[in-house]
Image 1: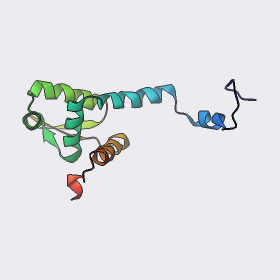
Image 2 (image 1 turned 135 degrees about the vertical axis):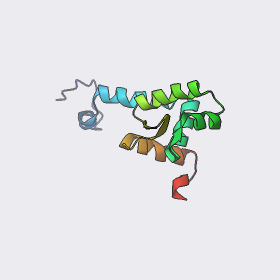
Image 3 (image 1 turned 90 degrees about the horizontal axis):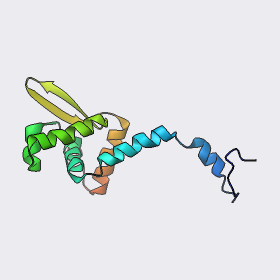
Image 4 (image 1 turned 30 degrees about the vertical axis):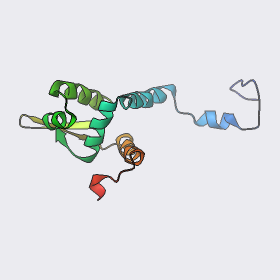
Length: 121
């Protein structure tokens, strides 16, 4: 007897799958990460930071955007744990975080755009 109270048994052993399913909070966290990537500007900024460490003013120039607009996107990416920052004097530099989620996204982006990572050339 299934402890999930499923209305049908199709012999697919869904109970085994459900036993391994991550917690609802884990899905919410991953969903938040994906929502960060749902914005094309943030995705472009993240792609840049996958390949180099950069400051707001250079990212702004590369993106053709104001520094405050770029800073807003950087704050969201940093809050989601996808990027990190460090201060050197008055300048703040951003780069891709060194965690599994950020590294997986880096490789996924490169594969989706069918480009070789500039760091691997």
